[in-house]
Each structure stands twice: as structure tokens, then as C-alpha cells.
Image (tube, rainbow, N blue to C red; front, side):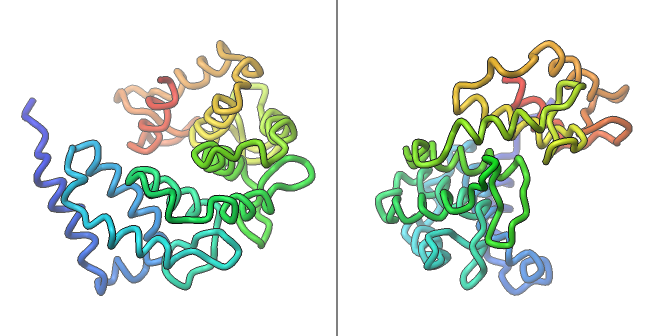
Length: 236
């Protein structure tokens, strides 16, 4: 097996950022904050984060913050809890959390917790256990986890656990690798892993491997890299 072509990866990541007028860039504009997170963490893993203009990135992130305290996927885009996490993660990567009003960001996340402990992604009210993980993860990074009702948040996540050991996006929802990654991650951060049936969940995860060796996200689906990443990282 050959060596990883690290420099090619670096050049590709940097080239994507420069193609702002391409069709792909325009249609994916609303996801730019997420793209920044994935691209920058890839560079960090490759030991090449120094090739980035930190001040430029930080300035752009700040320009994406909404008056509500949350962050949008790009400048002048509506805030969402997902983009808020990506913004916080990038700032933490650069050790630049001091450039934002942490309590203001915290207030935005707290405002998205519902009475049953679940979290909405934005003001429009969509509920998903992924948002529960995002809220808990983000507040953990900001060291403000005590600002939400953690007990209710955990109780809601557990209510989404299925008889097969997995977790769905809402109570009764189909078990999926992405949801399991998020639910287990949230329970780990809150010190609640004892509420999981580890043997049953482990069986479900093992069943995701298909004959080719790849991993799928749920039964009867083709294997894919994303599911493989979620399952492998989740098992760690």
C-alpha cells in the first residue's frame, strides 16, 4: 500500500475554498460553515493547519453570527444550531473562543431546548436527536453545560432508544448509525452511558458490516464511507 498523498489533499482543500463562483460553491453556499469545519480539521490532522490565514477565517466566522447569538452557514444566512456548533468548533481549533460572547451563544442554544428536553434546530422547530448532541457538545466546549436541563435532555434521548438497541431521530424513529453516534456521544458527555444496553447496541453495530467489508447506516442499505466513519469512531 502506498503512502498517503498528503500534499494533494491539502491542495484540494485549499482549492475548494478559492472556487467561490463555481456552480458547486453557489448551491452549497448555505453549508460553508460546515465545510470550513471539515476542511480545517482535515488540515489539522495532516499537520498543515498553518497554511490557513487564521485571522481571515475568524473574521468570516464572526460575520456569520446572528443577533440571536447563533451562527448561520454563511454571511446573512439564518442561524441554526448545527452551524453554531461548527463555528464554535473552528474557533476552539484555533484557540479563539475569546473573540465571541460565550454567554450570548449559550443563550441561543438554551432557547432551543423544548419542554420535553429535546432540542429544535432553529426557530422553525424541527426536532432531532442530532440537535440534542449538537447542543450538548457545543455547551460542553463552551463550558456552559449547566445552562440547560441536562436531566430532561438525557431522558428525551433515552426515549428515542429502540428495542434493537439503537436510537432514532425521535421516539419510535428507525435506528440509524448517524443517530446512534449522536445519542451515544451526548450520553457520553453527560456521563450517562450506563443507560445504554451496550451488548444489544454492539450487536446492532456489528450487523452493519456487509459481505464486502463495508458498513451501512441501517439494515438493507448499501455500505458507504460516512456510515463506516460514524460506526468506527463511535466504537472508539
